[in-house]
Length: 333
Image 1 (cartoon, rainbow, N blue to C red):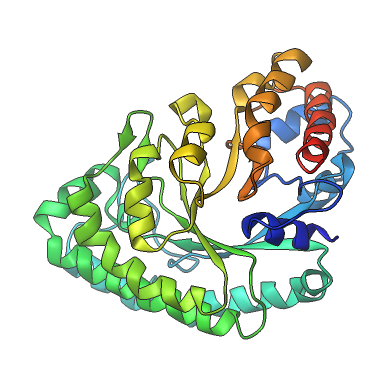
Image 2: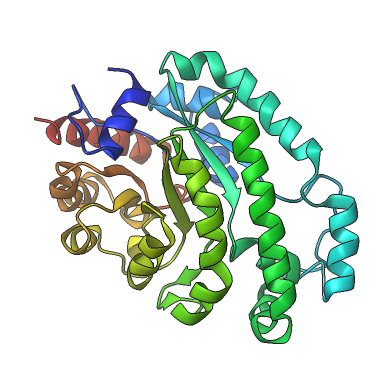
């Protein structure tokens, strides 16, 4: 059974042979890789080379963000690049939703198509979501005010983004059908959602309802990418048509055992507490023991609950991978 088939079977709650798929859903932090190369990881390896080095399966990302190259950058981290509708229309005319973005997506897909069809790689399509994208434009603080100060503009932005996402889907899926679609959102923190259900329903829900049916025509699962504690949001996501969520950060209080009990058909990706990885084998094994009952139920692809931090040594990561393989085999026994 190929890595791609293992992944698809898992997300369809179907039998998996040999072991569950073993993926890093996102590449490692650059500082993590720098440390490992000082500790013996071959310096010439790129991301795929590192995956091969550790014997991990390849979940690769095709990115289709709404902002083209060359767009202005915020002056400070978390700052915005627009303040009002005039700024937005100027940015849109010059940098947003451009054909060049879709052309780059298609070219990337063509490079991956042969290996994908053979089942050697798994592909995640990354789309900007309807919380994430306006925040990118307004900045973190400006975005929160914009729900109240610029509601019409917020709807305009998300309507335009939905139209662009549909263009991406229509053009890409003619060439290659990804194995999942992830909407970038990051709309929770360690105490729960950053917005109310009413704001979610008014400003995000209509655009999910517009885009997601185009994805599901192809039988592709749709997940939301949100850091923090997403537990309270799961009913909202399900109402929007979203099938699952990642990365399920344990440090934020997320409990995938509880989520599986509450929502047995909800898909999950991630969930392995990255904070135990620097502590040694006993703690890493205990974390796999915590996850194993959920791994056995299907609908869950285990992975680190965000990128592996630079506090994890190369030797400890090798221990993690060995245990990962052991428990992915136990899960299908």
